[in-house]
Length: 316
Length: 316
Image 1 (tube, each protein chain N blue to C red):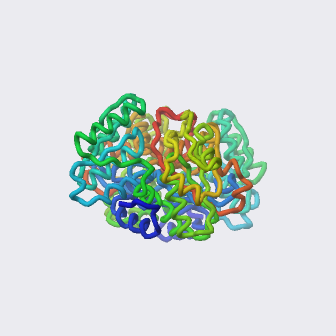
Image 2 (cartoon, rainbow over the protein chains, first blue to last red; image 1 turned 90 degrees about the vertical axis):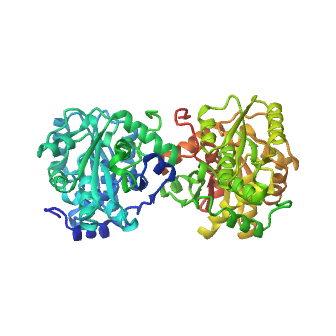
Image 3 (cartoon, each protein chain N blue to C red; image 1 turned 30 degrees about the vertical axis):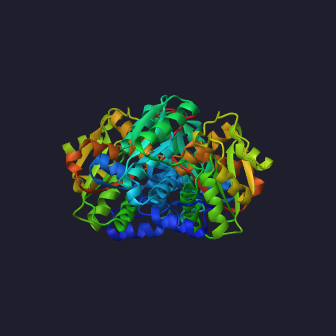
């Protein structure tokens, strides 16, 4: 298990470890979108990843980092979203079991998705205290190992493999951009860029409504979110400590975007590229559209983080 | 210009002719969808084609079949949909101009899309008489050449290239299925299958609400649609004569599906495959879901015809 910032070798080992369990997702381009954005965009499509999101990379790496004999009591996490599905599927693939703590107001679609991967769902009250107490109780009763969604070097090394694949496929990128929530993907991307293409500018984008990364990087210390009022439901969490230390070192700039900018960017990608992405995914592209002077004429890698949306509740 | 049923050489020549102007679209698969369908599906993604639909293949082939000196008066068609956009873009790429006759109740989005490709939009009353009169007048006034949307061997040879690419990429298919409207894609697919993999079973699917192909193939003569009441707006037309002759020869079975079956199949593809397809595209997949005994365990090629939908008016 990694206890320090992942090295390039750690990321390579993570990639080898998970390669049989994840999808090597395609990189796609669109002349039409490039004309609108005024730059050349290379979209790494983690919306096509297993469970529909990049989270499968980190969860697989964390779980398969345990030796088979360590896996027998299962894995636990609290998540109503993509991380919960990823831990469920990775646990199943590892021949183990998963306990997913979900708030009792989770949509039945999300509960069904987790159960569909064979996990046991444990409902809690929709607040942090109940969530942590429930999680602690489940771990004590079952002996399951906690898989943190982002503040964990094994998770970061797993998420880093998306950018690694992107850089192996596309030459001559000037910059790369991801959305930032807890910072697992953002930190992993920053590390892969730093090791593989050190000249690359690393940018991150987040909703203005949950601008903890923006405030934290400005202040030099973590400033937690006071609001979680965003459509980008994967980005509501405050950035993790391990993630923050990495981003502080390697990120050139944080952009913030409004809810309407997120929705407009999401719709544009659906319409022009004919792919389904979730609102969190659109935050990076929205940041590019909002800051054309930064990206003009550049070759920019964009990680599209996932495609899990409730089609009956679209914002447009 | 082709005046007889396209041969394999004609289709190969069409493919060479248009290859610089179309996208070589990917073939994608989904374990999740395969489990649901009970067979192995290979989706040829013409939703990623230029203008968002396979129509670009046929229109390009028809237009580029004219010598440069024959193109100077432009091209005309009547279409409120994908064919209009395809003729617009192909005319522009051919250094020519396009006149698209559209009903005056067309959505502003569709009119803007055609104009965006540089074509001139000529509005007519939303009935067949006005449409044909307007088209005849435009052709007389401008000398533009009519590009029929389906009942034309050059169009059929162009549409045949989608299945040709599919068969070049995927071995061991047992069958291939497309939706059928006017029959350009269906006839082209049937020809490519017949020439390249003669053992392949060719199936077509259409909405029960516009079941002219089903009735026509049963009767041995064209039975026009009496209703066009379907969400699959690309499939409202009655099958063409040239198309019918080809389908009569090479199609094993026609399936019909209800409106709800189309919507359910469309939603399933959006949700599980994270791609945007239009309702017409979902008809082939809906036919597979409805007839599991025909496809069980088989390797089936499915042409996803396009991805142009109004995201503000989705059926789910």
